[in-house]
Image (cartoon, rainbow, N blue to C red; front, side, top):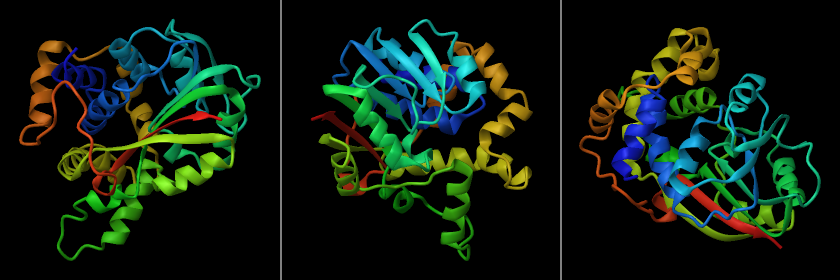
Length: 284
C-alpha cells in the first residue's frame, strides 16, 4: 500500500472528518515504519478500532487487547477480530495482569488523558521486561506551527486555548519530559522522532477550521467533537460504511494539494520543528 493509498484509505474511513484523515494518514505512515513486534499487544486508547484496522492492514496481523474509557467506542471496537478482548476502563486502572504484554501502542491518545503519570505507570506495570512501547503524541511544536487566528488582530492565546479545549489536549510534553516520566516507571526512551511539519500542520488547521472548528462554534463551544458527531449521526454512519474509493482518492488529492507530503514513506522533521513526536522505547 503506498502513501497515496493511505491518504485515500483514511479519507474513505473518515469522510466527514477530512482534517482527521489528513493528520492520521501522515501519522500512521510514521508509526507503521517502526518495528512493532508480534506477540500480544495493548492498544491503549483503541477508540472504535478503525484506525488500528488501517494500521494492521499496513504492518500485518497482530494480537491485541484494546482499552478505552468511552463505552460507545469500545462497543464499536469489539467487532474487529484482531482484538482478543476490549476493556472499557480508565488508562490509569487497566484490568490486566502484570507483565502480560509484549508491546503497547498508543496513537494520538496520551495528550487526551489527564492522569498521564498513572497511565505511564500502568504501561510500566503491564509490559514484560524488554517489552516495547510506541506512542504518537503532539509535542511543544504543535502550537508554534499553527497559523493562529485568521484576523490579524485576533488573540493568539485565546485561539490556542479554544483549540485545545476542542481537541481535548491536556499535554504537550518535550522529549526531556517524556524521558523523565518514563524513567520514573521503569521505562527507557530509545527513540524520539518528529513528524507533521509546519506546512502539514497548517493544512490540517485549514481543514479543521472548515469542519470540526465550524461545528464546535455552531454548538456553542460546549460539546466535544465526538459528541457532535454522535448527535449528527456521523459516528454511526462512519462505523457502518465508508466512502467509495472512486470518491475518496480524488478527495484525498485535493486535501493535500500544494503540501509537500511524502508518498510511501515517512518524512521525519527536526524535533524542534515538528508538531508531533513518535516516542519509542522499552521496559527495563
